[in-house]
Image 1 (cartoon, rainbow, N blue to C red):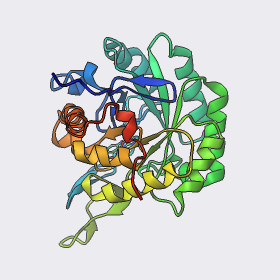
Image 2 (cartoon, rainbow, N blue to C red; image 1 turned 45 degrees about the horizontal axis):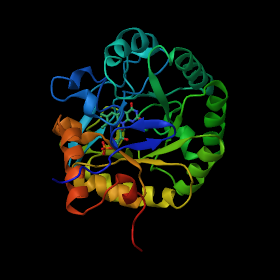
Image 3 (cartoon, rainbow, N blue to C red; image 1 turned 30 degrees about the horizontal axis):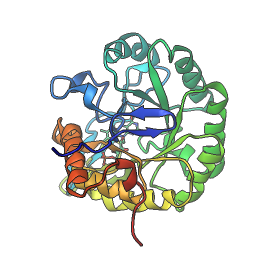
Length: 309
Ligand SMILES: Cc1cc2nc3c(=O)[nH]c(=O)nc-3n(C[C@H](O)[C@H](O)[C@H](O)COP(=O)(O)O)c2cc1C
């Protein structure tokens, strides 16, 4: 009989039964996916980015298909903190899978307030960690502005660190000149984990009307088109920081996931693939397991950063 490989991983004190998580904004609040997959089989669930107050997001059109990817300008539409805590988390609390809350703010005070209030309810609502989104390209204030400068990255992570003992994941933007200085600033400020990448800024034009296809003009590119960019950035960050990395960007199947782990990601997140195939996460978990068996790798952690150069 073939012995099953060890799939358990740990990032920033968050223990997962396997290294496959959902990427924020592509998995709703989990409930939408439960008719398709067993949520208990996931490594962790990262929910749609939350703000203090509910947000309507940007006007439509706000999603455009592109060759090998998609452009979105949702603009952080979400239910707000109160509905998340009172209505969404009780449903998810039925599952054993760790829940990670992705947070966004227009001001540093908003990030601090969100982190403080989530910390207060974290035991009761089984919150395993916070992912700080300092990389959203689709909001006018805040968002990506925080994550494109090492000083403001340090400031926002450091201030959040003071109000919560929850594991902190800092999510980085690919839209920077040198991602290594941003990753270093996040680590120095007290981040436990780095996640990357958020979407790559882009646009699309309708040649008949000569108008932008997105009402917001620009949007965030995701899907297979961004995978080579994401892999390169994960590899660069792996060589720079000592904290674990969550890799994402265009992961569509197990082979993509394994590439990210070899480049240095301890855990990987599935985003756009969920919108194409709602069972993508489960297919990827099974594909990783098969790869480990075929290649006689006993423990998934052996893959992390094993790139031969
Ligand atoms: C429709 C959509 C909504 C997203 N919303 C968020 C969000 O609320 N917070 C966040 O940090 N990232 C958000 N992202 C970025 C994804 O979590 C992920 O970083 C990015 O899409 C790259 O991964 P992928 O190519 O696998 O989709 C969103 C992406 C998409 C496509």
